[in-house]
Length: 146
Image (cartoon, rainbow, N blue to C red; front, side, top):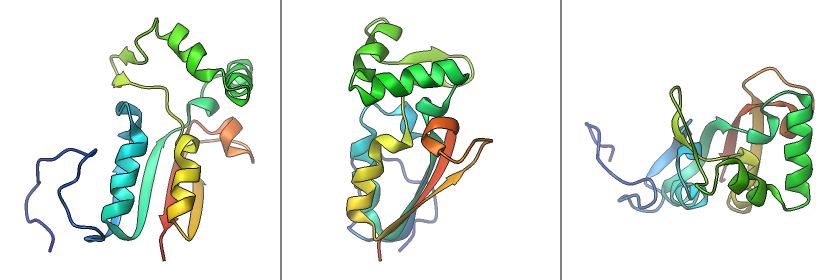
């Protein structure tokens, strides 16, 4: 049964039953959450058929050199240290246009989603090349459970 009005809640602890919704969506919110993996686990729990996410890919943002440096640091497991330095130990940035935001890539949770979904589809929502990880600053993901 779907609520007829908006329901106040916490994306890290959804007060809905397992599989209560056919499709659960998140648009541009995961980069505002310190622990997006918890929110995604909750999405997967309450979704019967699938999840739909549109959010950022920090490793595809910026000019070529910036992207290459971020991707290299990430491949070496050093991105958390670089991000800590970049954010002066806060772990987040604050901007007028986006508010409080954490460094986030939809690829951070890709394996987690693949473990719960039968098929996962990535779509580019901004100009980019063939390798979405390296060139797309924003992506859409559709995870189909069954």
